[in-house]
Length: 106
Length: 347
Ligand SMILES: Cc1cc2nc3c(=O)[nH]c(=O)nc-3n(C[C@H](O)[C@H](O)[C@H](O)COP(=O)(O)OP(=O)(O)OC[C@H]3O[C@@H](n4cnc5c(N)ncnc54)[C@H](O)[C@@H]3O)c2cc1C
Ligand code: FES
Image (cartoon, rainbow over all chains, first blue to last red; front, side, top):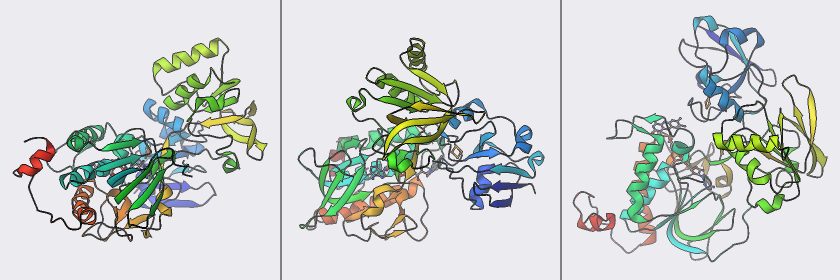
């Protein structure tokens, strides 16, 4: 099964199993990974699931959709690698994905 | 903090804290039992999570309604409770709740509305919607003095050097509204695109072209000042370089998030930040204070709208007994009861 590693702002790592088709946000919530709030439950309406995709994975994950880019206006510390984790779906290609959670979601 | 009362206290049977779907339906269930209700919500519109977080998304598990949008459900609920003419106090946050000597409750909002009620229904959901706070060092020192999340009186900002941060409707609206009174105004946003009404965007751009306001590309980095008095907002560009903006006031607009808020200070028994209730009356540890919807917890609780509706019905029975202890409650169907038809205005 594909895996995702979440790295907290303080540096703590969490590696979890991530079934194909699930989102990076869902896997964080299901495994109690801190740093992702996901208040709107994945509706792309809250920006509290913001992550910085690790530089090494930026190309494979790709850019946000226009709607997601708009929603990122409501996140803090937005970088060129910023994504909303509820909008990243797991594929075989993303096995091993590394994302960083920001200092604060809101 | 709640302010000094601005008017005479309002007297009512029930006060409902939270205008989410469950608070709205509580108006209906209380109304059938002749209890009048006032409803308070910090949001400027009714509907709670359905209205704020997913107005256009479909809900599939409302019994008898195969599919309805968040907004659609709120509209239907408002229509359903109309016969009971609930009084709404929107854009107000309930700060304090205390019991008076005669057993009734005294409740005050942040802008000074005072309500006296015989029963209180806490339908506060995931907590009150509050502005997101930027992760800046020493932010708390500046809040309420130089950093504000909402504008109550435009006059308070006259002659000030203002920085507005954000790119949504609130940021744009306040940029346009404050520009005429500000000494200087800078809009700070991370990109040159705005998720706001196109009309506001073009008006803002016109002001920038006329040099009446400034627009800077960047994000909040830090605050400079002393004793809560701001002197500069430091912003960061995408290449991580920083630049200062002279400022007396910072207004950050990054949307809302839910926080438990004042509910935690009312002496109610909480479990994991939720109000513990029984499943007969949905009453909290304080008799006469009920809690329904997402804010409560009990063995087997499911945070679903349909569960909240059920809780509202049972709560209303218990609340009616508190308000009118001597009145016998007759169980009736809305389909057939002529007295209920009268209340619903369908007779
Ligand atoms: C994306 C998403 C999809 C969902 N889909 C479904 C679904 O399909 N089916 C389903 O059954 N449920 C669904 N839910 C859950 C459902 O929305 C909640 O169960 C429901 O909104 C709870 O209603 P409520 O009235 O208890 O609270 P809320 O909707 O949270 O409303 C509470 C209100 O109280 C206000 N408030 C709190 N404290 C104060 C205070 N001190 N002063 C003033 N106002 C205050 C808040 O501002 C808020 O408006 C979904 C939720 C989300 C986020
Ligand atoms: S969970 Fe709300 S935007 Fe992703």
